[in-house]
Image (tube, helix red, strand yellow):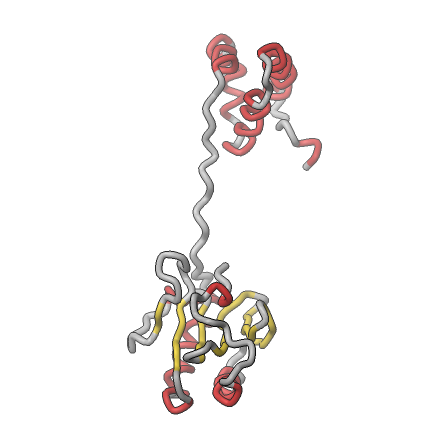
Length: 197
């Protein structure tokens, strides 16, 4: 999850925008969001999920929408604070209280709440779990089709655990003894670390 603190602009700890931020708070108070504090700033949540936050920076104050990438943004007011870094967070920056149109701000907030209720979030991509099958193990799989079938029934994650267990051994005889140890486990559909789970 992107943290507002990662903004390249200076996070205003002194906060010269207190009146403007109080005004934003008064608008947000008209919604079902719950105010909390995270990363040293004011964040609003729905069912403990971050929806938006507000804060002051050196040259502006802002509302940031944690999943702002899903907002229609018909008025084109949202910016990506760190292009190429933040995937879903979007900011709406203001330089004066007069710029804050309450009804428009509420429209954006209500849309963000609806998006949260619909579960619209960017999920981080799953890490690739592929690892090369060591030759010693591949020969065993080729020789023993039952072992090969049993191995393929494991999830990629559990397959990777077995493969790493063999690969991490430095000496060939250690690799061989580890292979002998895991063969019955694989055939009995027991993951390498199942007893610890």
